[in-house]
Image 1 (cartoon, rainbow, N blue to C red):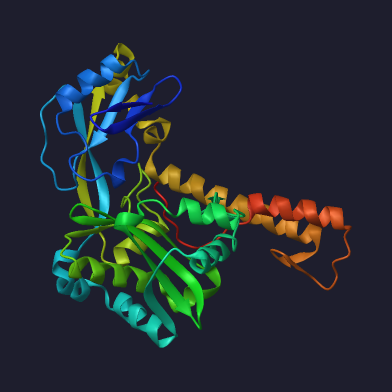
Image 2: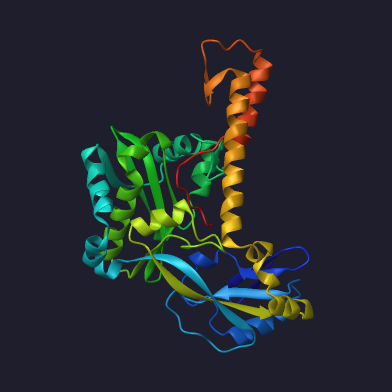
Length: 339
């Protein structure tokens, strides 16, 4: 890692090392004010990297310099015209937003105190795996949960979705120049029928409009060549649009120049066709679900952590099975954490 012009730069990778700005999405101002001078200083820093990659502001125009730019994307709600966004939503989305209130969901701003952190921890601990992958926040202690959610407190906001006084969903978004970026949004699977996720996003869009911000950003619309996903469809139904973002790649070594010409900087997944990627994801999800059911049956559990009346396995086997369930069970809640 090195520091250039007040920005921290980190490099990751094995045979091809790519340098990026640390916490790039959450930086205010021009990420790289003078690309030519920045790259010159980066080359002189001694940081072992082959390519320097960075993005401009979300609505920036192309800049000149050594290297190339490619089109990336972001999932965006235009909050400078909140009325147009709301009226442009599908009728079902507007109904679901109202349904959340009718079913007792209350959305309000929250402070990151011990009670709110405990509510977040309860949501984290509901499912050890989410979106088909091991959920890295599962099982963390309260102090860790509070500390890790305490970033950018001077320019972030927490929203809580409450049902009968219980926190059943939350959102954290960070103000970055003329936009707000969603860092986390998550809810309890048991309360998804009450549509807390939709209510959280609608409230965040309203707050952004009131603050005079132009955009509410929810990560990317598509990731790599994975164009058909439940998350993308969820964003589409909520009125998010795919907005093009310029991402620059500057070679720092001969290996970097060759990699850019071959397209190797995009990784091996970029070589696979989208249909194959979607098929592989379905296979992975099916295998995880099957493994979770098998493990729970062996342990005498109908659901995670709930023993059946016939459960008579030794305690040691049950404990081991529960630990394996934490690696195999699949959660359904939507989650974003791009720190």
